[in-house]
Image 1 (tube, rainbow, N blue to C red):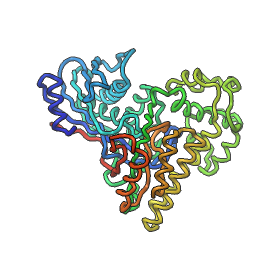
Image 2: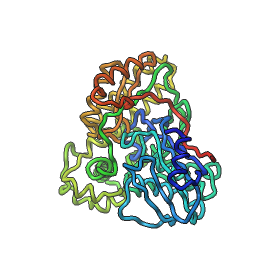
Image 3: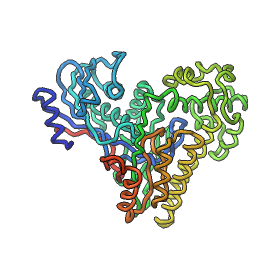
Image 4: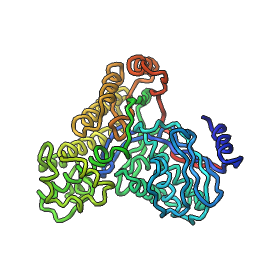
Length: 439
């Protein structure tokens, strides 16, 4: 559905009312650095061409939310009061509410809004459809507040977006929101945290990154206790076990904070992980840590404790350290004077190592992702890995531009041959971050 069609649909849904603004907030593909942003380490994504679109008009005395796909996403009304709580709302409305709360702080929450949402970021695909919706909603409410991105500290704005998305339930680290706001056309970004630092990274010329959907949905909010938030809990427990071994009197939320406190190199952190017992540890054995107090700031930590009998902090933090090392290597290779072909070979190797670690140490892959990445390598990709939270969603593969067409045809033949929709595999370019235009 193009923009003109969305404008017409908005008018149809809202009895002839015309939208006043259009927000575009891109999804993202993370090239490398999975599940390490919430441990404080740098990541390397770029903003996708595919985006969330939000049309809105300032009108009425409540917030009316509709989605172009009204079969899957039911319409909903919210109060203009950002502190209002709701018991039963669809997940997509939770994301709209999170963004609204982030942006409305810059003005007065007393104006009604009519909203229509659409987009071409595949839902539950690991390409940050949820965070792009939060970012779009935050820019909308910023506009309602009478402000633009030029009027505010954008770093602080992103911090607020992250804060309110965490309150929606996901223990996110900040990559998705940051790249959706700060994305740069034509290049990836190396994103560091605490403090937030953004470094442009030029990717090798003559190569493309191909996105392929594993056809298994990655539903973060529905599986918090067993998947995403469980990993955050496991990492936090691992940090505490290291702190106790070293007799530190301080507690740290991220491994990077612990590293900075000890003034250690990233490579040295591998040795610290050896202080953690290997394999599964029962939660019963860890009761002495006072887990509810240790995990109190992690959204839905109670779900994790109730739905699991054991954790594996050694494997999780070992992945975090090695993945953080791979991100630094990836950036250094891109910045080097090597030929583009030589860079691509080395980057592909790092991507493959990352996938192996996600599968074996972080256990966030899936059968379909394993099958798809193997197929991509077999058919010419230099590297292929899951992107996003995992447990489904999409893969990203590094492919020579001259081979993209034949590569896509082979993957369609071998992986998507049983379905009619062949749009599950596509190439994309680094794009500009979120924007808003007056219609």
